[in-house]
Length: 116
Length: 112
Image (cartoon, rainbow over all chains, first blue to last red; front, side):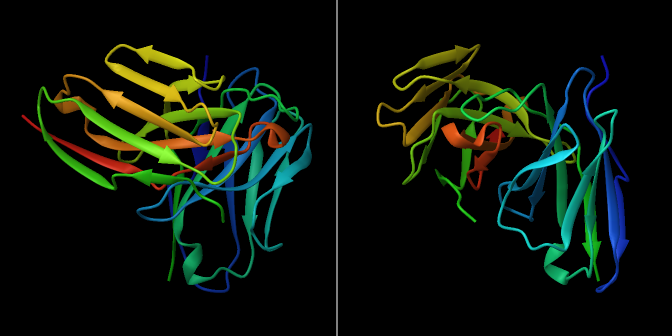
């Protein structure tokens, strides 16, 4: 069984640029969530994708967008990068997401994004 | 964004000592979780709690889901050097499925 994988591991961008981060979900999982973890803080929920549609969003501006593909892998896109976007971006997959039901999420190792 | 209040922020203990950390919230959560994160890795689930008042153990780890559904604690007994890392509490609310709200973490250092 393959766990959650993310690419790239590290990335350096400059302010104003755009970035795409990728996530492959664990085998059998159809739900992917993205989290932003600033240095010294806990992860913050960005959004979740289920059946290729956004299924819940945290307090992040529209320049944070995502996609989920038929194989359940996912991308996180961030436009017009700002210095404060520097963080570890974590992807987590789970089996199914229904309101009122928690299913265990398995986290990938993250992508470390540095914005200069 | 909303976060859980986790304390203490950091702990320095001797190997063999017991450790306790807790998490509180102004909101009700119907699931409480405790994760450990090592450098360069994503969080790994240690214990999941699904019912108010529930007390669950996983080896040397014990966690409880507060009766008000607004708090939880994690105890680690007889700490060992590999317990070093950052521990996070996280909660899931009834209306948000798998969306997690995290605490700010407790950095644990264990001196041999």
